[in-house]
Length: 354
Image 1 (tube, helix red, strand yellow):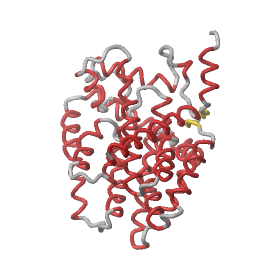
Image 2: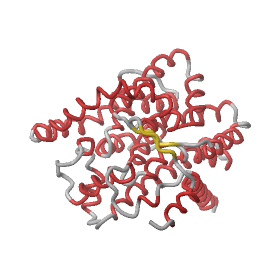
Image 3: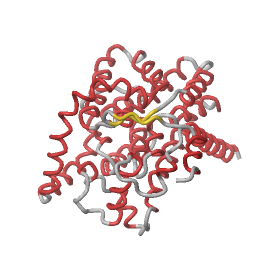
Image 4: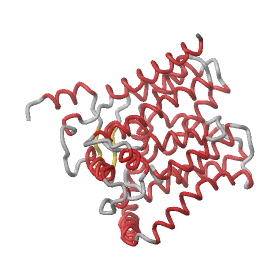
């Protein structure tokens, strides 16, 4: 009976946090009526739908050519029309539900669970796939959280085998997530233990093998990198604003995690954290979106605070979640800032005559 009640509470908290997130940070409903070329909301969705119809096609944007798992799933299920766009939403629900499970596992207080889940649901980890159609980011963040905090022995191997085929960001975020997992379990950061990263080799071997027989895709990737790297000088001044918009109040948890890492591990952890953020800056222009790769550190900060101050943690984390709900947010891609409006405003725009 208690297990059933607990599951119901977690489902209620997950649903309530997602509902609040969508109410305060709504998608552009009026842009979702039909395909709008050149919009954040549709450009990636258009490519994703083309892939779902023909997963191995190569006449698409280079960033999407190896993100094959969601299109293959949609194709195998024969999902028609725009139906594959439900897959990112399933990822949002799964990742947010897993967040609730992790917070309850750490401290069984509804304020702590609700606050932590709301904090997660109001970062770009959720706001981006809610606002931009066809974005499967939430599945990747779910995989990184499974690496960091999963208790099942198969969690890390399964995430390593599947998530790179959703988005290469998983590989960029894996070292930091792995370090978080070692700290969370009170284990050392030894090179022998790093052999867990070998689970990424099947992806690397298969992708390199396929690339040898796909000259067009390899050339497109090289052209993408050649065009992306010169953009860094434009992006660096905008990085603080973009990174702030991605996490906002969740930066408090990041700072707490770094501050309370033992001195002997702080240098390595801080270096990997900065390297992770720096690589995403170099390879991706969607600054507010990409900084969600630090989500394992956000959770680590929350959990560390719960360990050290279990009496105050529920109240403080609930306050952080509410703060993230009311602090304004925006998407920042390249040099474009796209403020996120609450649901009443987006409904008015949707219902306004064209």
